[in-house]
Length: 231
Ligand SMILES: [Zn+2]
Image 1 (cartoon, protein in one colour):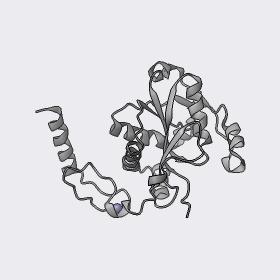
Image 2: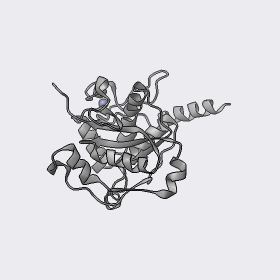
Image 3: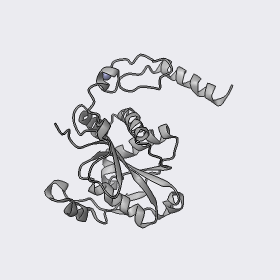
């Protein structure tokens, strides 16, 4: 038996013992012939606020920022559940959509670096939701994820109190430090930064700059949700 047969068998067994339920509505998801594992039923999926033709986030130079969903319900519910209520099953569910965005935009990166939380916040929560999303996406892309490449050395001020993009960028300057142990692994590889939500994008831009300053190639960034529909 080849490796492929084994993984096919393991997946079959997994589904037998753990039938897949929809992360949004808990209904059982029927297995689809030849389909990949689904985490969201078709009815709930049709309610999701996909950005689709608008997946490249505007005004985000110098980095490309790919965003799968608008920052609207019912996606906000999923992100809140993932972030505050331990519903870590939303990470692989949302990663399948980040994967689809990545493919649609023809991106090509070698390693995923999730946006770090301040260590105090991570200790309170017990996990970093961006790390969970990053791990799930890395598995789909079959590339590694490197957590802790960026260290958050201070919390930023409240973003909403600042006005323009320049002011927001100035406020986040110096909030990250690169983990120097990771430089040999990151060198020569294209990095995709990953986060759950983007607002102004200033924090991600600062993270990208922190990597670039050390000579690391940042392909761009990907986020599950950001922006509102313009209609
Ligand atoms: Zn559902």
